[in-house]
Image (tube, rainbow, N blue to C red):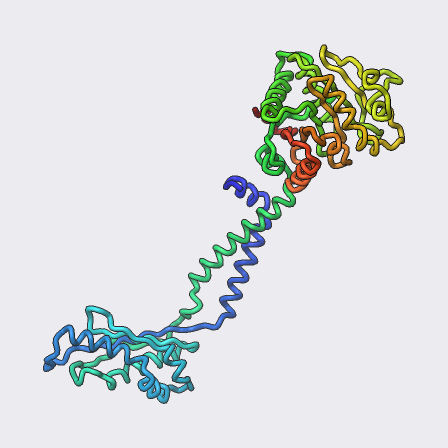
Length: 422
């Protein structure tokens, strides 16, 4: 997923993002508030060289380092534990007290940690006072406590800045993950990039909704309206160049007449460049919308599947080289079994007689007819902008491919049309 797509998901799910940030911030605040606190106090001891010492400067520095190490010794801390006003185990004190010589100086810093700030300061001071009695230099130092430890005003652990940083990073990761996950489930397909990602097929066209879905602008080559279908035809042929197809099923995802409008105009555009084309209305039955107009008592696809000769059911189209096979009058008769058993043979006969067969199929959301018709052929999916979720579109694409059909591409139809992409 690209950065701009993540940004779009964050904006669309901004309320969820704010909720995740608020909940995570609250959880971090509660966690810090409830976590055990540790306070750190520091006392500073000066170990100046006695004027009468014969030790070299390097030897004195080494002795200061040794003296700092003695601050954590069991013997010294046992003595200090007996001086405290509260009871502390010597083993605990050994992990709570540390000291170090500040290189290049005469100073030794004694650091003590405790859950009580007053005890932390008292412990650091008592260690600094007791440490000279464990002097390994045999009198080479003069000791002075230069900085007495004071009870710290705030805790040193947990680290507040670290907690804020980790909490902010965690909140950001959770917010992005939640926004992207919810956006994938709930957002609708409204751009070509989203349509391509969901279907795994190229976007062949992004066109506006026609004012009248019964118009046939492809009948007037050279006009701007007809040019849209010329470009769609070119894009379709280019996409199928590597694996030529002779049958293209045009199916909308949702109910409507847009796929009929696109399929009919595409058939005319193909016929205009010298292809022999058969336009088949595969929307048998009254629930699939208004059928293509035909003369009364004219046989159609339903009759051909029932045994009528294909040549007797085909009618001339509005342009030369284009023929039309209407849906036929299925009435209340079930046709699904015939579609599964004889449709493939009927299409094989049609493909032998025509360069291209364009099939107008019922919507994918309504029934599986389009998938059956596209088996061993190819399907052009018509997607209404802003009405189908990306997961639903992905599921439709997977179901089409599951029957061995190729998904040539998608046509996105909506108000924010980008015309045709080739």
